[in-house]
Image 1 (cartoon, rainbow, N blue to C red):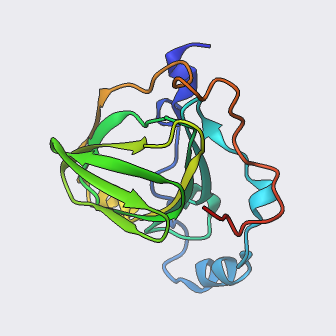
Image 2: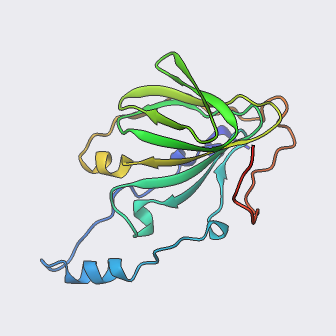
Length: 184
Protein backbone atom coordinates (compact mmCIF):
# COMPACT_ATOMS: atom_id res chain seq x y z
CA UNK A 1 0.00 0.00 0.00
CA UNK A 2 1.39 3.43 -0.88
CA UNK A 3 2.01 6.10 1.76
CA UNK A 4 -0.54 8.29 -0.03
CA UNK A 5 -3.28 5.72 0.68
CA UNK A 6 -2.50 5.63 4.41
CA UNK A 7 -3.25 9.26 5.22
CA UNK A 8 -6.78 10.59 4.74
CA UNK A 9 -5.75 14.23 4.29
CA UNK A 10 -4.30 13.35 0.90
CA UNK A 11 -7.85 12.75 -0.37
CA UNK A 12 -10.38 15.35 -1.46
CA UNK A 13 -12.27 16.81 1.51
CA UNK A 14 -14.95 19.42 2.15
CA UNK A 15 -13.64 21.95 4.68
CA UNK A 16 -16.59 24.35 4.70
CA UNK A 17 -19.97 23.75 3.08
CA UNK A 18 -21.65 26.44 1.03
CA UNK A 19 -24.84 28.02 2.29
CA UNK A 20 -26.33 29.14 -0.98
CA UNK A 21 -29.71 30.12 -2.32
CA UNK A 22 -32.31 32.78 -1.61
CA UNK A 23 -31.35 35.47 0.88
CA UNK A 24 -33.03 33.94 3.91
CA UNK A 25 -32.04 31.13 6.18
CA UNK A 26 -35.45 29.48 6.46
CA UNK A 27 -34.52 26.55 4.19
CA UNK A 28 -31.08 26.14 5.79
CA UNK A 29 -32.57 26.13 9.29
CA UNK A 30 -35.14 23.53 8.23
CA UNK A 31 -32.36 21.39 6.72
CA UNK A 32 -30.22 21.65 9.87
CA UNK A 33 -33.14 20.81 12.16
CA UNK A 34 -33.84 17.70 10.07
CA UNK A 35 -30.28 16.39 10.53
CA UNK A 36 -29.70 13.44 12.86
CA UNK A 37 -28.63 14.40 16.38
CA UNK A 38 -26.93 11.05 17.03
CA UNK A 39 -24.34 9.38 14.80
CA UNK A 40 -23.69 5.67 15.30
CA UNK A 41 -20.03 4.68 15.58
CA UNK A 42 -20.88 1.36 13.94
CA UNK A 43 -21.82 3.27 10.77
CA UNK A 44 -18.52 5.18 10.54
CA UNK A 45 -15.38 3.37 9.44
CA UNK A 46 -11.83 3.96 10.62
CA UNK A 47 -9.36 5.32 8.07
CA UNK A 48 -5.57 5.54 7.91
CA UNK A 49 -3.31 3.12 9.79
CA UNK A 50 -1.41 0.95 10.43
CA UNK A 51 -0.08 2.80 13.52
CA UNK A 52 -2.70 5.55 13.91
CA UNK A 53 -6.34 5.26 12.85
CA UNK A 54 -9.13 7.87 12.74
CA UNK A 55 -12.93 7.62 12.86
CA UNK A 56 -14.43 10.99 11.86
CA UNK A 57 -17.75 11.47 13.62
CA UNK A 58 -18.59 15.04 12.60
CA UNK A 59 -17.12 17.16 9.82
CA UNK A 60 -18.59 19.95 7.67
CA UNK A 61 -19.06 17.54 4.77
CA UNK A 62 -21.63 15.65 6.85
CA UNK A 63 -23.97 18.63 6.84
CA UNK A 64 -24.51 18.53 10.61
CA UNK A 65 -22.08 21.24 11.69
CA UNK A 66 -20.05 23.93 10.02
CA UNK A 67 -17.46 25.02 12.57
CA UNK A 68 -16.00 22.02 14.34
CA UNK A 69 -14.58 18.58 13.69
CA UNK A 70 -14.87 15.62 16.07
CA UNK A 71 -12.99 12.36 15.59
CA UNK A 72 -11.64 9.35 17.44
CA UNK A 73 -7.97 8.47 17.18
CA UNK A 74 -6.70 4.97 17.94
CA UNK A 75 -2.97 4.34 18.19
CA UNK A 76 -1.86 0.74 17.80
CA UNK A 77 0.67 -0.74 20.23
CA UNK A 78 3.78 1.44 20.05
CA UNK A 79 2.11 3.45 17.28
CA UNK A 80 2.53 7.10 16.40
CA UNK A 81 0.93 9.69 14.17
CA UNK A 82 2.57 11.74 11.48
CA UNK A 83 4.52 14.79 12.67
CA UNK A 84 2.52 17.81 11.58
CA UNK A 85 1.37 21.32 12.34
CA UNK A 86 -1.79 23.36 11.88
CA UNK A 87 -3.17 26.74 12.86
CA UNK A 88 -6.13 25.43 14.86
CA UNK A 89 -6.11 24.20 18.44
CA UNK A 90 -7.19 20.65 19.27
CA UNK A 91 -8.28 18.97 22.50
CA UNK A 92 -7.51 15.25 22.93
CA UNK A 93 -9.53 13.56 25.67
CA UNK A 94 -7.62 10.34 26.42
CA UNK A 95 -10.14 7.50 26.64
CA UNK A 96 -7.70 4.69 27.34
CA UNK A 97 -4.04 3.80 27.22
CA UNK A 98 -0.94 5.80 27.96
CA UNK A 99 1.32 7.80 25.73
CA UNK A 100 2.75 11.19 25.07
CA UNK A 101 2.83 14.16 22.73
CA UNK A 102 5.85 16.01 21.43
CA UNK A 103 4.97 19.69 20.85
CA UNK A 104 7.67 21.88 19.35
CA UNK A 105 10.30 19.49 20.73
CA UNK A 106 8.83 19.24 24.27
CA UNK A 107 7.43 15.93 25.55
CA UNK A 108 4.09 15.80 27.43
CA UNK A 109 3.01 12.45 28.93
CA UNK A 110 -0.67 11.44 29.20
CA UNK A 111 -2.87 8.54 30.32
CA UNK A 112 -6.57 7.66 30.35
CA UNK A 113 -8.71 10.50 31.72
CA UNK A 114 -6.23 13.25 30.78
CA UNK A 115 -6.79 16.08 28.30
CA UNK A 116 -3.94 16.93 25.91
CA UNK A 117 -4.17 20.36 24.29
CA UNK A 118 -2.43 21.13 21.01
CA UNK A 119 -1.95 24.88 20.75
CA UNK A 120 -2.17 26.98 17.59
CA UNK A 121 0.74 26.76 15.16
CA UNK A 122 2.43 23.94 17.05
CA UNK A 123 4.42 21.21 15.29
CA UNK A 124 3.41 18.05 17.09
CA UNK A 125 3.18 14.26 17.04
CA UNK A 126 1.14 11.75 19.09
CA UNK A 127 2.66 8.53 20.51
CA UNK A 128 1.31 5.40 22.20
CA UNK A 129 3.88 4.54 24.91
CA UNK A 130 2.62 0.96 25.37
CA UNK A 131 4.16 -1.63 23.05
CA UNK A 132 1.42 -4.18 23.88
CA UNK A 133 -1.89 -2.23 24.16
CA UNK A 134 -3.66 0.36 21.99
CA UNK A 135 -4.58 3.88 23.14
CA UNK A 136 -7.59 6.02 22.20
CA UNK A 137 -8.37 9.73 22.23
CA UNK A 138 -11.48 11.70 21.33
CA UNK A 139 -10.38 14.79 19.41
CA UNK A 140 -12.36 18.03 19.22
CA UNK A 141 -11.13 20.88 17.05
CA UNK A 142 -12.39 24.01 15.35
CA UNK A 143 -10.32 23.44 12.25
CA UNK A 144 -13.19 24.18 9.82
CA UNK A 145 -13.68 27.64 11.34
CA UNK A 146 -9.99 28.47 10.90
CA UNK A 147 -10.08 27.30 7.28
CA UNK A 148 -13.24 29.32 6.66
CA UNK A 149 -11.35 32.41 7.86
CA UNK A 150 -8.63 31.61 5.29
CA UNK A 151 -6.11 30.66 7.98
CA UNK A 152 -4.75 27.82 5.88
CA UNK A 153 -1.55 26.93 7.71
CA UNK A 154 -1.26 23.15 7.85
CA UNK A 155 1.57 20.91 6.84
CA UNK A 156 3.14 17.53 7.34
CA UNK A 157 6.71 17.50 8.66
CA UNK A 158 7.16 13.70 8.67
CA UNK A 159 4.67 11.26 7.11
CA UNK A 160 3.03 8.37 8.91
CA UNK A 161 5.03 5.17 9.04
CA UNK A 162 3.90 2.74 6.30
CA UNK A 163 4.16 -0.33 8.55
CA UNK A 164 3.18 -1.28 12.09
CA UNK A 165 5.33 -0.39 15.08
CA UNK A 166 7.34 -3.21 16.72
CA UNK A 167 4.83 -5.13 18.85
CA UNK A 168 1.86 -3.95 16.80
CA UNK A 169 2.26 -6.31 13.85
CA UNK A 170 -1.03 -8.13 14.56
CA UNK A 171 -3.01 -5.14 15.82
CA UNK A 172 -6.49 -4.63 14.37
CA UNK A 173 -8.29 -1.34 15.09
CA UNK A 174 -11.22 -1.78 17.50
CA UNK A 175 -14.03 -0.96 15.07
CA UNK A 176 -16.65 -3.59 15.84
CA UNK A 177 -16.70 -3.57 19.63
CA UNK A 178 -19.96 -3.23 21.54
CA UNK A 179 -18.58 -2.16 24.94
CA UNK A 180 -17.16 1.35 24.73
CA UNK A 181 -16.24 1.45 28.44
CA UNK A 182 -12.55 0.85 27.87
CA UNK A 183 -10.70 -0.16 30.99
CA UNK A 184 -6.96 0.26 31.51
